[in-house]
Amino acid sequence: MTLTLDNHSKTRESSLTQALRQIQELNSKIAQLEQQHQDYVREQQNLISA
Image (cartoon, rainbow, N blue to C red; front, side):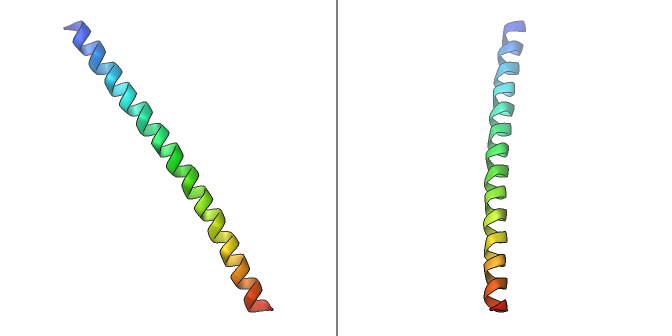
């Protein structure tokens, strides 16, 4: 019984760790996209000003 609970616990922890890693990767990608968007907007504003 205890062994089963321990294994289940480890599996759940592993899943949470994996989910957290995926969230961090997505946050990183979002940050990159936001930066690209800011660069794009800046370029467009420069074109309009020119």
